Length: 606
Image (cartoon, rainbow, N blue to C red):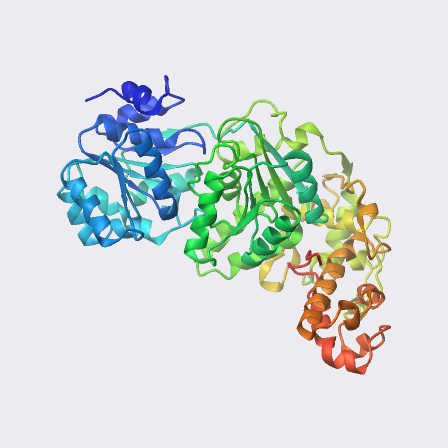
């Protein structure tokens, strides 16, 4: 039996182990079980590949990544390892050849998808072969509290029952204490040695910004900092993925879409291009990325808020696997919190699951709104302590300014209470700033004592305060009621004058006023509605085969933004809206206005 160090040097070309690799490998070579938590790029694969080569028999790797198995096997074959895979992409004759090679001892490593492994025929095949170990990759998929749960993983405890003498190792890059406990329990690894490596990726610069014309922000980021470089851009919806990829292609970038709704062959083609070509930008939902082993990804950008810190950490970890500097950019807004809250509330999980999902979302929002080192907060979430600020995140490089927000926060909380705790952020801000739009009058909120008491602050400043109060637990966003703001117990001391509150100042993006093309006389809080109305106009124009101005002029849309009519009678008072246009187009525009404060409010018309 060759020594692990000999295999490391002669098969993989490295001269020494990193971190806990040697201890993990020695545990498995000796026949022990292990649970390994190691950050992306930390060298997890060697932890099972080397023991599989050092022990008699074939190492079986259980992986959910069918689309990547071919690349993984090709990489191993290039290193001289006898490797193969069994999954649904193989023709029957090809699968039979792999099975024969396994039984004749001609394979060192075999990759199998979990849904295939749990079939009786496959279990019978493995029982007739000499096995070196089982490696359960992406083990967080077994956790129902994890961010990528796969039902097939729940049955992998059968490995302990059917193969009690074969060592097993479960590996993942991301798992908090609760998830680690569930992995050990569900995979019958109660007596396994635990190897928890440091989570820090010091080469990644974490930057989190408020959405403020997100396309302009992304374009500036790509052109100024990462021209011609490979990266991943994550979006929450399939539609946004396709529109963003198309827009980037029109802007001259080599951008490809990836989401579960695309044909499997096209997804695989795009994935292979990303892995094998330089400078490809993959625009994707979270369906993309798990197990991607591309070392030169220079950036990961999120155009929507991830649903948890675990997901954020795993997705940003796909950048800079080569150890060279990389950037993680996140653009977020309160509408993301509403949308993700609605998704969690409508899931089929138990009430406990929904509550935990909400806690994870709150923790993610908290990371966005902190004024201290982001890396310290990120590592603290995973149970690690970073003694000093990192010096390589946005809050370290450009410390945010803070201000005494005690009195304004009390005004905002009082306004939420007096308006019945059933309205979203936009409506509450309109009350505070004394707006005279129709919706305010409809509910009689121009008669509240808090009406107009916040004219000294801009709408942007009030919305920033809402986000920070949500992040700090003074307010909750009720996803079941379309993003209504509700008070929490934590706000009582602040309202009673028993505590003060320092919040982060909101800085307007430099040059924003110069970048507006139309609607330049519009306040920033009105821009989402402006873009939504223009998108509605564009769609109607295409459906009717006419230019957008034939539907309504810009002046008409601007007046809609200012007056916010929510009835046909009110819309008829808007300049440019006649009977015919009211009948043909009115309801579509009214729907946009009635729902403008809910999630989808940042669409830009090309």
